[in-house]
Image (tube, helix red, strand yellow):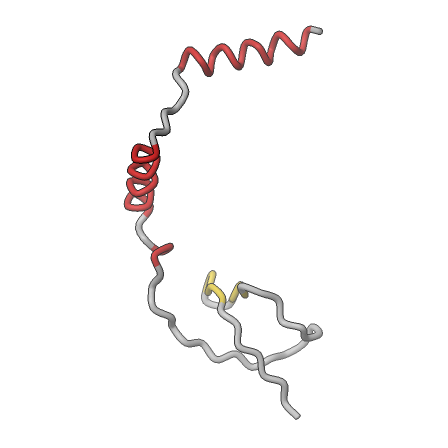
Length: 83
């Protein structure tokens, strides 16, 4: 009796598929059928994703630290090394 598993994955190059989850099979030869799946939201261009993240942060009221705050944290960390 043939075992059959259906899992999704990502084609990383012409010969390599990275599966989204493990398949409970020992190492050995297998037969693979490749079906192109429709694009998902995660395949948006980088700058589109970055803009969406920026808008979500602004909407939440998040404010990044100032340079003065970052410099103070770095200085405090360096001071702790001397102790």
